[in-house]
Length: 249
Image 1 (cartoon, rainbow, N blue to C red):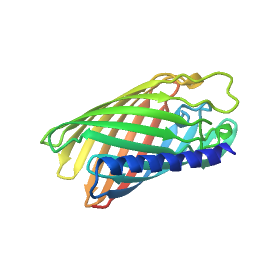
Image 2: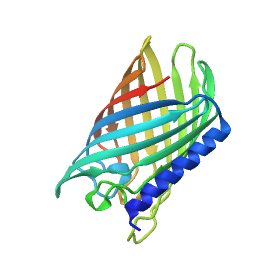
Image 3: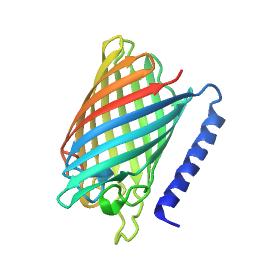
């Protein structure tokens, strides 16, 4: 069986298991959402892959189901990369994510999220569109929301890196840390800063970056503009992004 077929099978299995777990924990209404993220990067490689690109453009289509204290999401990226050897484009590595919130964050106070993510080897590693392996990531998010709209969070995560086909040695299993802060500029406008650091993954090295974003909410729509600066062999040097999300009540 090919790696790509295996990855599709794993994505369905993960989505099914996460949905059953979520339904068992929290019955009630479910709110679906769709998103599209466009990003242009200078330098870097997809998710710490071994083939850095001079330029990387991506379009990531996302779907999410959200309950009172759980979320189930799926993301599929389309990548176009340019490097010294030419150009390549195609499907990247998909991601299935399941989150449960033992203490959901409210309008004010603390919250805790626990997440599991499965990165699927759906991108062609030989073209630099993926890593060639399926990874599992576990994350813990601690959040604090203030009544005036301020939001702060800390994310600690660990990745169990899959072994790519034909790899000579195992790739390290890195830890990562994210610190975020968001403030309200108006009734429907926010801005924020996110700092991210990850241990080295093979030859691509460690990753450190800082992202600033500005977002506007209008009814069920959310628009977010972001700019990122990276410092590390595993980071893009700079990136610009635009995200649109539509959530049904």
